Length: 256
Image (cartoon, rainbow, N blue to C red; front, top):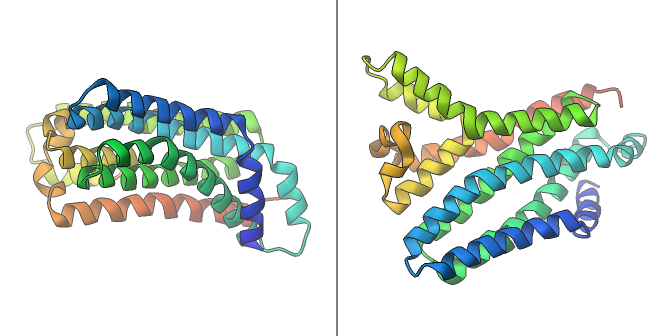
């Protein structure tokens, strides 16, 4: 039943003009960047900047909006003899597959055409994980409240925190405790932000650590190793799994 729900949602979302516009926007941006400059590395750097801002924002806002727009459908499913686990996971698989398809067509295809390499593959994988993690956060935010405006507001606050505020807090932390050995503490702090994890992985592949900023440059040695890459990928997977577990716990007890 879970996959039937997912299939229904996928076909429903594929008719969405918003998702089509998102796909075209990503495709136009990525293709234009590669065609404007023959230097593939510069193109990948530019796409990284776009990917770390636009992809998480659209993923979390679109997933939250669709969740609330399909609230009556959810209520109908809950009234049927279907487990809430299957209902929520069916919705997650359906929404994730649709948004991932947009990411593949908009970002992965241009990269595969113009810059197919280990770095390009890393960007594709990291972007996909980032998409899934922000969709999981969207589900967590959506299950907390029944009000659509509050849910979207919370989703925007989550994106704003991870995309902008977090780096400011890290810099403040470094400024206040700069006299102490902070390397291990900073690895733990960076683990608390999926966007920073993605940024570090991609920019290390591009071998331009200066663009990572002060926080990322501190750990180039760790995250550039095989252990560091595995550590980062596992944490990104946790950023997908943990919000969904929290969302599922709330959804199971929620009075719809």
